Length: 563
Image (cartoon, rainbow, N blue to C red):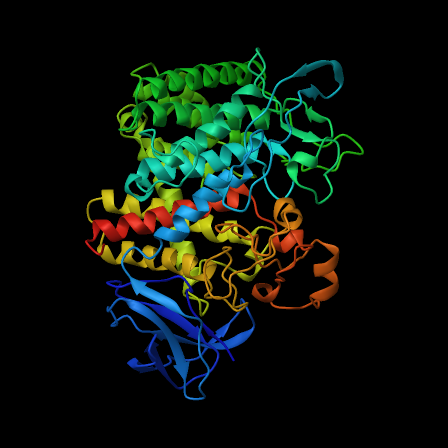
């Protein structure tokens, strides 16, 4: 038996508040005192393809009184508790941003900011350029990418892209201080945290504009604290993937840091540094038009973030450089020509992951007012049509399962929770397009937003596993991320705010393969075990994707007067 709810909560004024149950019949919503507040019947049975069960929807949208609640059926079985209130996502949203602070490399984490999760400064030695033992340089800083201690340019750029667009488009969601060392300096803490990563990324660029693909040891460290990892770190060879993502990221950041209402002299100077780095990277891309991809040298086992094409990375770079040029009132034709050339290959433009970043090009072009005045209408329309068509497909997916999610059975892959949240990003972009188009109906936007909410409900516990996939949030939040610091620090509970990779229909680690029977429905393919890196690792870019979606939902509630 299961009654699955968003374990964090529901906006009081939301028209619908949805749960899913595994039994038909009557249900009662009770407050913390055990008093019945609402009674209702479960909806019609749904044969759910994601978990292989017959499920029954519940909607208690009429309840608007703030408080703590749980659902109970006639047999006395209860759901996890949850809140109904105003701005219920604020805590989890801020924790998912703050979690990035705990991944800082090259500095000590102090108790004032880290609570019990302190450690000494780590990875302070100079790194060596792979294949050039005579060449070393200082590259301290940035975030550990995931459960390991490596730092990688392509996922770093995607993380920054998620966060900066989340801030740029939903600024009000980033008002609260996060208690990091820079808090109180007059700059939103999301920009303070991003700057810590951006300053490291700048160190990874060569004078000729090329960018090293990653900075890692030869092999992953054991499960030790970061300051205990004394292995030599290498800057691995330049790739066009890294250069293009770096170029896009720097061009975007140059706009945001100079254009933010909080920008002062220091931020403007930093913006100029970012702009110069973006221009050097663009020059390198134009001088190296052929793909220069990446695979690990034989014997190295750290993440390689390999890809089969750099077309989407070059598309994103062209889009961001075009937006920057338009914003600076410069000639945009060089960037538009490159953008058009790549679009003419038929490249899809709706994804926001590290493998396929083309969705960021759509985000750039369709949300920047300056570039809309200069770019050809045919390009704008191609992006609009692609985004809306994908949004419609995702909304249709949401009508085919009991959870209302934009997921098919085959979408539960390694890091499926980023698929969940990236689709929320796409749908949020589609809402902006629909709002701007004359003749669009509120029903289309409402349809998209219902699926966005379903994606977050799933992440926070309304799923067949019964877990909230964000540490520290929910009665049954997962507790054992595949993360070296939490494994080695001797503290029972992990720091709050980490998004798990999530269910994986094709698990890739030894324990998951052994413990999950073949043929298990994909949403059930999950274990809260530290060893299960193909299910339970965390990454900076799974967090940042979720941050974008929670930022959007928070701001929409404010815009509609619900907060």
